[in-house]
Image (cartoon, one colour):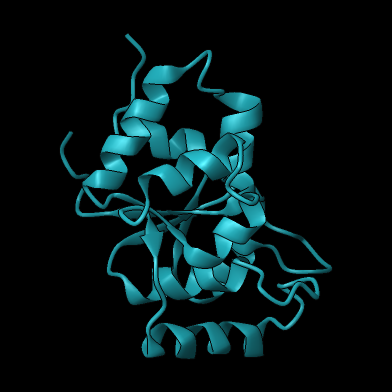
Length: 159
């Protein structure tokens, strides 16, 4: 697998759950999960540490899968990432929906810190009301996409 312009895809917790439980379950699409694991090993796919709490306790499903391949897939925060996360929260205080350890601002903060990072979310832009991840990404000039587009860009194909 070759890196696509050195992009790093930072995946939202809800996207992990949708991918594993609803759209591409490993019992039906094992090849996708092999490719995701390989891309994570090549540091092309990541997720914030905070997303681990959102996907579950590690005992089953995608939570167990992610924990089995960490630390290669899990992003850790640094003081500069914490500063960027605080910048996101200051500008979009309702992004976390009152969830103290919400991964959403961390997704954007990590993407801000990495060159050519793309946030992967199944959310779509909000046209009013509470901002969604794509709105926040756009405000900070961070790229965002969805799972299917990420798979296409990484040339994931089932054979």
